[in-house]
Length: 73
Image (cartoon, rainbow, N blue to C red; front, top):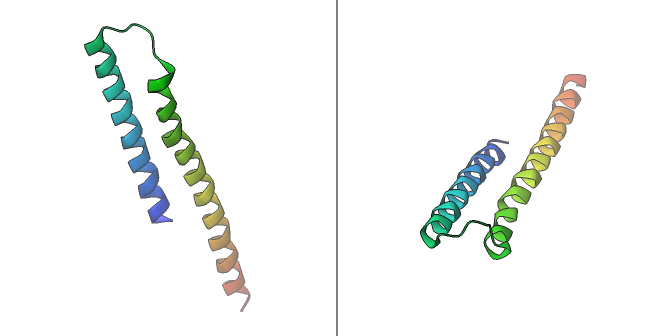
């Protein structure tokens, strides 16, 4: 569970870095509109964050199930 939390924080960091890099690149090139080629790779960290959150929820449910089974003994 800790590993998924750390991974989510790292993915947020990667996403923020990508946004800052693309904004800086667009300002350097004096481009006003975002191009699809630059925005497409930004989808991957967002999808990864969503999948990590779902994995964390599943791990938590399994952990709760194991704890409840231990209480029955």
